[in-house]
Image (tube, rainbow, N blue to C red; front, side, top):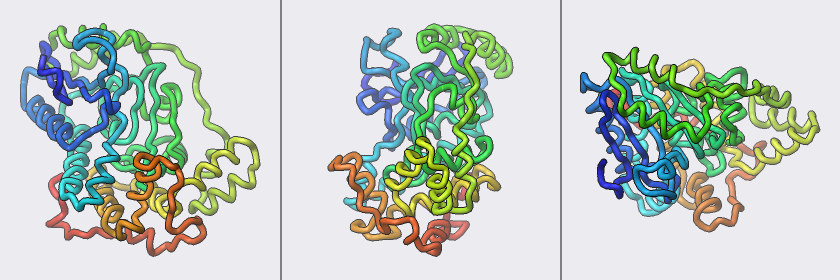
Length: 369
């Protein structure tokens, strides 16, 4: 095994590449270094004819390395938002590299030539979703807590979120993007964001068996793994009827529809939306609806443009993302001062400006996708 203090452990099984995120003290949140390590391992295995399948998991604080208790505590809580805040304040150029390399990794994972399987135990949020969407097999457990909560910090659902959320049934993508609602395993499967649920306790044995098994090709590897899954029978999940409100043309009309419904779910959902950045709610809704008709590469390039605007369009004093992170993770007062403060004050032209690229096509940092 690699050194236990590495944040990404990349190991070889018989015919499997095995990646463990090993930053449990931060719920396996991604750093720039981790993104680089993930990319290097995946590229090496993509070109290795003896690797037929790749598996991803997270680590737990408890237990000794290599034991059952050591693994599958949480998959990945996303990006390191404290780093985002500090880097923005300091004008640190590595922030630009972070998003460029992360989005390129998201594209690599979703277009990988070999099957990838993710053991999505515990927290799977933000950047963690970017690691596990668009792959061959997404395994969830009774511990899974999945979300794209970026609007809570004045951001938008990135890491390809516009692409995979827009492909959820109906308007569930709009609902998940705007509210950042946490969903469980059963709900994730219904939303098309996971494939199968197993017992959390079954993961370690399955991982060990995968590492030892020998395969002649990727198809055989995926067939074997699917046959080994101790699947659970779960009741189908039906979303609240009020989710239909998220089909309205804009956020203001979504809120009006929720207010008119008046039931407890709609009232609570409207209250949640009113706690988010009005500007970034409108930006996120625009993103989802544009992404529904875009290729993955084009959508990720659009997100790279959008995140540039998030950190550079406004001064630090008026920056929605910096302010959102401050309120949630730095000062923890949970009282963000959004500008503007009301949804009816959002300028449509300010929303559209997020979709204007600061780069020419030949200079775009993701031009190679």
